[in-house]
Amino acid sequence: MRKTLAVAAAISVCTLTTAPAEAATLTTKGTGWNLTSRLGVTSLSPSRSYTVTFATAAMKARYTPYLTAAVDQAKAVGVKLALGGVETVNPAKCGPVGHVQITEMYRPLRKPGYSQGMPCPHPPKGVGIGGIAAIDSEYFDGSYRIDTYVVRNTVVHEMLHALGLDHPNVDLDKDGVVENFECVATSYGNKPIMCDPNGGYRTTVDMGKLTGFDLNGLKALLANARVQGVR
Ligand SMILES: [Ca+2]
Ligand SMILES: [Zn+2]
Image 1 (cartoon, rainbow, N blue to C red):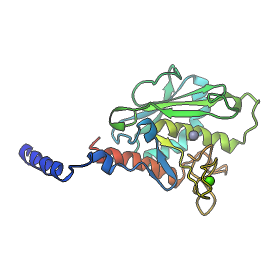
Image 2 (cartoon, rainbow, N blue to C red):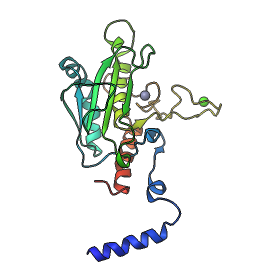
Image 3 (cartoon, rainbow, N blue to C red):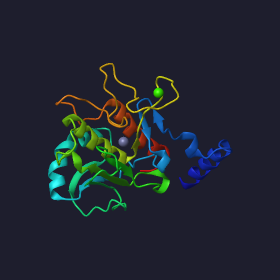
Image 4 (tube, helix red, strand yellow):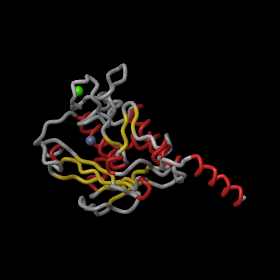
């Protein structure tokens, strides 16, 4: 068995003399989705457990209902994602491997109404190890008027950033500028929840749910891991 594998490996090396296998085979963007390859994240391990944790019990209580539907959708496409408990979150430092940490900050991007999420950059083999989402505390202190569906979609959007999805905005109108909200949409006008600065469904029933575009992004993260032989 071992000998057979060695021979197969030798053959594949002979046929790939010019480019590394990974560069040739990973897919990092598609219609309505884009992976965070600029921070070195191209995959999610299909076998690793990813756990969403919260900086305080109050945040866990607030955000768990916001995230439940999206977490279930991610699980359904094969991401071993679960909602967890409370732990200390240092926004300047990545937490334990596999943790997606949610906290609140006042204007984390120094812009009114903007939240921030990012994966821990440059994990080994580009396989995501989780990240941090800082939700703008202005949404809840009454100082910033924001629609409920935008808050709900934004919290999910930031969680997905931490898992390795980037903005899928593209220059659809060919004016040379990739603009805010310039994202593909379904025939019903629904843009990816990952659209910058926000997207997703607007109805009470569907707000906070991933669109098919976003699910394709998660599937691509898992598919890249399989291509790399990562379990
Ligand atoms: Ca444009
Ligand atoms: Zn974003």
